[in-house]
Amino acid sequence: MFPDYDFIKMLYGWNAVKPSTEWYVEHGNITAEQYQTITGKAYVSTEA
Image (tube, rainbow, N blue to C red; front, side, top):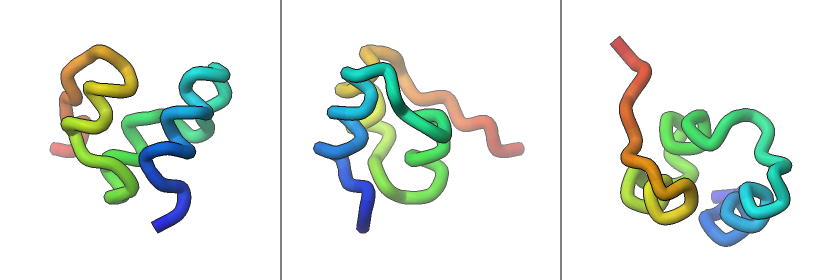
């Protein structure tokens, strides 16, 4: 699935992720573990 983990990680490093990194977890592009690797923060779901 595009964008994939490596592409999202690159964009994050450039401070150019649109929409938010959380959005990519919620839509299945990356896992919560990958989110934590990219951001250094644990993923907290915003879904109710």
